[in-house]
Image (cartoon, chains in turn brown, purple):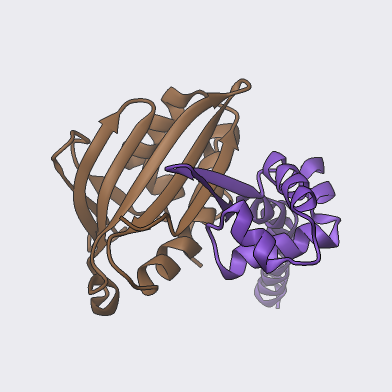
Length: 148
Length: 107
């Protein structure tokens, strides 16, 4: 496994349990993930699919680790753009830790092989998704509703 | 948010972020090698301030500590002001549309 390609950290004024619920509940996901949502039972070894608003499969993979409300590891591959899919698998690790009364959420991606397109594609999206998630959990509303 | 502005208000620290942007996930040693004008102590001190402001995130990998540029706080600053201006522009456009359409129906 190569070193992480990026690491994103945000602090959210809420509890780790609420962050976990927002990361794993498809109805909540749609609110901050520009309509996209996951289909899985979140158990280690289970398949995981990320779908666009219209139901097309965006990404797919498998749940590698699931430890509510602390740690989620997903084997993750793009499924909708051939040249990105060709770069193969990545591993996304999400960790939630209590930190001075708030929740610290860290997202990191590691590519199993080489390539830059997958990382380019996901690294642009995460800061907006995380901002939206923070707004949603702290204020009940998101800043961006559509992927403009 | 004060910590983010304070951290960014220093050219050496912006240089450090530029180096991470070019090559994310560097050790202290790698960063020092790329910034020969700064002492190791200075790089280490600046990294501490950037970490405190959540502009740098670190990951332990074996005995190494890797440093990553974390753009999330900068994104949040953009959203706080730029987003607000966009919203008011949209509101202005929407008001104009309503006013013009009102005029038309009054004719």
